[in-house]
Figure (cartoon, rainbow, N blue to C red):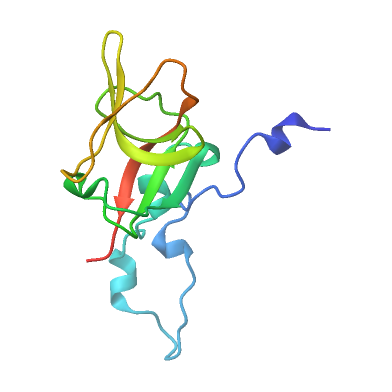
Length: 143
């Protein structure tokens, strides 16, 4: 079996196509004059996703991150391949509960800090069942 067959994700984006290669319907027998000057459209997969196999979309429930612009019902894009560093917004699993918080790591201290005054920071006990599930790269919300 050829190993190259399974090496990439199924979706490869639209980088290889130009606007001129996309067929248009010519009801009048000729294309629009602007078709000659059109550029390739924006592909959100190319713009927002770096590592497709490690990227997930999640819906936020709650108002723990309103100060960071992430509201109840928003969708976040989470990349599991990015190393969590202090100051990043992460999806953490603490004792079986999934949380979205800002990650803070000091010399001997790890904290999950909410972006609201309604909640207090969580100091992570060294013996707690704690993992960082992924790093939030983008938040998408309705205007």
